[in-house]
Image 1 (cartoon, helix red, strand yellow):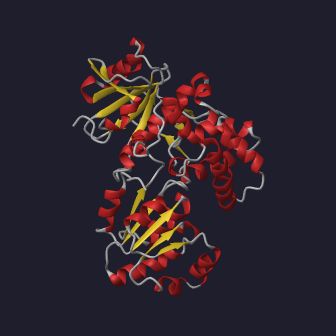
Image 2 (image 1 turned 90 degrees about the horizontal axis):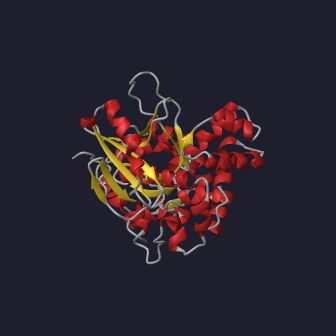
Image 3 (image 1 turned 180 degrees about the vertical axis):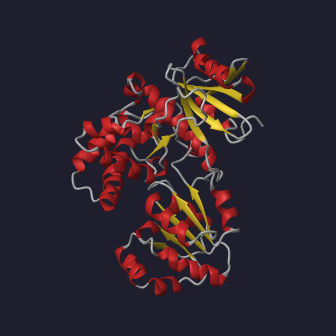
Length: 392
């Protein structure tokens, strides 16, 4: 197992809370991490039908088997366990008693937060960041190979072919989970919807247009987006909340967490196809947003990210709010820095005040630069930039 950036924070939380819940998409490495960090704890998979039946039919008897706690995997399958855990942790008064993992935010977070309020710490483990991927001996060195493969650990750990593994991932996890939660019977429409979402990554979210394109209602499209978001496959990046002149776009942008999954859904088979693909820039932008997001969540921090767009066409791809200073990030997939790459950043600075904004350009080239117009960060050095304490 390669070291995950989240590990020290997971250990620290287990010393302070009786229950720690590690959330994230399926196959992001939650089970591997928790079993490695807590090797002496019994491991219980609630995916197993017999184990799940025992846990749901006799929760007190089930939990009594683990007087010193346990790692309970995929606990969203038995959300009712959370209420029984409350009395146990209150009685035993011990930190790091139970470690939970879950891949569905919508059921698990609600049940755990209500039943274990003040007793549980929630953290998120997403597919691997670029820094984590580099621990493998054979990791892609070219930007477009990195984007194509994505960050799911099994692709590197088991040396799987990305497209083949991602195809099975979509079939065995995405479709199954959506069926269980939404009782979707028309998988063809859902598959079309998922691919349409991929085509709109890094774009403003238009639920009515997405729904109309695959023959579903606006409300159904809204429900499907919510499930995909709660399953940690995609997320909505909110527009910047500060009201300058009431002429700002209020619609969120859609982004996928994993560039490999995004490329698979768009039907991109090779890095050469990706280089020439019309969505190349959007894929790179979603990857950058995801890397910035992971820079926060891997340290147990809640990201405060957004984007800016006004009706005059001025747009800044990512805003990172540190409280003291605002990072304004422009994303360009080109390998050469062009003079107009900073135009939108300059306009944004003029609107909100230069003293509060730190402009940053993340691009597809290799040279790091410090210009008067802002910092230039090459894609390969994205994890070396201080995204979590801007302006320190």
